[in-house]
Structure formats: structure tokens, C-alpha cells
Image (cartoon, rainbow, N blue to C red):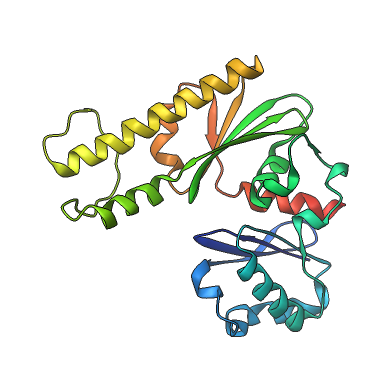
Length: 246
């Protein structure tokens, strides 16, 4: 069995898979709730798998939380927890970028889609909006833009007269009130950002890409992209699971 974990800035996923790589259990946590040193009660469910676990693999963009989870899990199951970048990634993917400067979640996403036939752009709507470029079996780098929710929350905090709203698709760009103006600005603004960055990637690479969307707001923007695309919100976990073979 395998413990696979993804520690993001906002949300943390911890999953257990059986020897056939079928999901046995999946837990979701607010990442901030795992900053406390006393989190054994949250992870004690892993104890029942103690004698069956072969590997434990994590990706993390929050070092303090990873350190806390690692220490706790190692006490519960008495098995070393390893982070993605501790593995010999050359066996599975070519990294044509500065690995130290690329989040392990983005590398895991790339690993999840690599093949010898297609080129991909992975668009992740997380705390940041990231674009990662994968050519066949190699990771070539990417783009980091402000996250949709992060930008929206900052606007709410800094502008007293702007109400807290939920983003939705809108057909018109000119808003008739504050709510519709904000929705139009974010929806059409990010649609334009996405379209332009994809265009620039394809122009610079001189290639056409299959687009994979992941993250919380991927459903909001999928239909606005006139390219072959699909949504997969478990890319990171799938990529980490592939590392169990090396």
C-alpha cells in the first residue's frame, strides 16, 4: 500500500492506495489546520495500515506543514516519509528547468501526463494560476500568474465598498453595478490572460498543445478555451502515484 500526499497553500490531500493503486481512503484538510505540532489525531487513521505501507510520497509547497506531517506520520507508521524531489526523477521525466525553483506539485502534475506522443500545457487554478509546459516526456518550465481567488480576496480586503461575491460566468463585459462589474472584470480578465499566455506559449514553442485544467476554478474557464482540453483535479496525486514505480 502507499500513502500519497499533496500539501498546497490552501488545501492538503492525503490518500491511501492499495497495491493495485486503487484508492482506499482520501482525506482533505485545510492546510492551516496542520500547522500545529499536535496533529496526530488527524492522521491516526493511518495506523491501521501500518504493516502494509510500502512507500509514502508527498509533494509540498509549505515546508513547515510538510515537516510537521512527516514527523507525525513517521511516528505513527514507523516508515520514512519522502518528498518528490528526493526521488531520482530522471528515471521518469526530463527536467529542462531549475528544479529547485519549481514547486513539487507542478512537477508531479507534469509526471501525471507525460507520454512520448503529445505536448501539454497544464493550467492550475490554485493559490497562484500556473501554466506548465510539457513536451513529450520533458518538463520545460512555466508561468506563474496571480491566483483568481487570492486576487479576489485581496480586493475584498483592500476595497471597503466592494462586497464579497462568488465568481460566475458572465455574458456581458460592462457591469451595471459593483457585483456585476467585479464578476465581469475577473471572468473576462482571466479569460484574456489565459488566452494570451497560451497563444504566447504556442508561438514561442512553435507547437500545438493539449490543455489540462486542474484546481478549484477550472470548471469556470474550461468552456472559454477554444482548444482541446479536459479537467482533472487529481493530477498531482496521480503524478505522485507514478513515483511508486521507481
